[in-house]
Amino acid sequence: VLWGIHMSCPGFHHAPQHLRCRSLSGAGTLRWNDYDRPEEFNFASDVLDHWTQMEKEGKRSPNPALWWVNDQGDEVKWSFREMTDLTCRTANVLTQTCGLQTGDRLALILPRVPEWWLVCVGCIRTGIIFMPGTTQMKAKDILYRLQVSGAKAIVTTDTLAPEVESVAPECPSLKTKLLVSDHSREGWLDFRSLVKSASPDHICIKSKTLDPMAIFFTSGTTGFPKMAKHSHGFALRSYFPACRKLLQLKMSDVFWCLSDTGWILAALGSLLEPWTAGSTVFAHHLPQFDPKVIIETFFKYPITQCLAAPSVYRMILQQNYTSLRFPTLEHCCTGGEALLPEEQEQWKRQTGVLLYQAYGQSEAGISCGTLRGMKIKPGSMGKAIPPFDIQIIDDKGNIQPPNTEGNIGIRIKPTRPIGLFMYYENNPEKTAEVECGDFYNTGDRATIDEEGYFWFLGRSDDVINASGYRVGPAEVENALAEHPAVAESAVVSSPDPVRGEVVKAFIVLNPEFSSRDPGELTKELQQHVKSVTAPYKYPRKVSESSWVGSGPFERFWGFHCLGLIGCCVAGVKQK
Ligand code: BCO
Image (tube, rainbow, N blue to C red):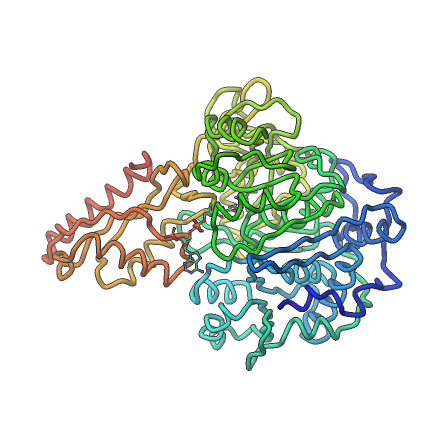
């Protein structure tokens, strides 16, 4: 049982006396405009503590700030006052017990448990840079992240503790391991008991808007994932009136974002967007994705708005329920991958609720969208959301006229807009590579029409977008290379009716494996990839080419042909 569920901790019911609330003039009143660049901003003190103050003054309804459930019937309901109290305690644990300081990095690999929110906001209060990661990661993924970031601390659960332990000796910077669990474990600090006994008195840092806040890892065509570093301005952007128009959240809304806690979509949808509006964040633990549980949850809880990748909506529609008329659902938004017009139509028909499309990236958060109430053009991802000036550009950064294919570019000159990533940490080459004239080149291809609506076309590189996950082919090829059957592989995107795209691997087998049953070997290879890297990357389609012999001539031509297959299919997206 989570300690938080009892809500019996004495400190929960009195917030610190000295909350530094740079209070807004009234509930829901915005202080900043789309192009403002305040010197200082901190989501914890400026937003979360504001709503705490509103609660104290009786200006916010008694809806919880966080409403968490799991499939065993447990529930956590925390008010903003409790969130302030608990995140101040967390801040004290991080700084006092763990000795972490502003600017240190912390790897946050938690499933959807209430402590995820505590660590995020605890870090924001202290200026510790948090780096969310999916719990699907394996030891090697974690090792890479810890080493490349020089993380001083990690927070995770029992499930991943052994994986972390297996790589920790290779991570000299890692000083603190915090475990979110009901059990203690040698070498780990017990997060829950530390938070319980920590002081709720904490003074939030005065962060500059452009000071770093978080790092999101994002995959590319080659090499390992890059670290897209975001400032506190990323959270400020959720505050801007133009961004608020995307969802038009109100204090009375109960907002459910289904993205995994490792992605920027969760940071936006499960933290920044709803709490900026004083809404309730709804979360279902969902250790394994199950569309039936999602449907039942919509029927059972008063969820008013939802944000999820298109694959989630697709999978719900495929359940063949007699009714998908959810009693309280009013607004649905989707982002992370392309959505077909007929899917938008089908969702409307079956649920009676419109499905609005948005577009974003780990580098930019949500940058385009069909704002709530705006005319939906089925298949379009809407218009640029200020302060982002988005244009279709050519490879030199020249703005293209309407209805001309080009790259989606976000203007960074003369001024880099608030909310766009700062740079790829420790990677000036990659940072420079995505700068194109006056624009940040997203690497996504699209057109814009005369009314300013964007129409997504695809990636300009080989990155695969499998059900909203960005997968670098090299990551999968490297994982396959570790299997003795694989002489060489080429990994590409392949269209899929449910997941939009899936990972497909073309494999040249080593000769001694050429007589193996293809079905069996495919399963073995898939299982292998799932075991050495985050399973969402595994090739759902595998095509074997066992004709490569062992002689140098045959191998040369085998690999050469494979390379050609890889190049061709990457361009045209194979079936
Ligand atoms: O399909 P299989 O069963 O063979 O394999 C699945 C899982 O069962 C399995 N798995 C998951 N966790 C595991 C595990 N296996 C071993 N150990 C674990 N810990 O591995 C495969 C994982 O694939 P999946 O997650 O795609 O499959 P699943 O469970 O069917 O989930 C479907 C979706 C749609 C829920 C999931 O793909 C998803 O959440 N997609 C959305 C991702 C997302 O939120 N993207 C947004 C990124 S941020 C962004 O784009 C910027 C926008 C502002």
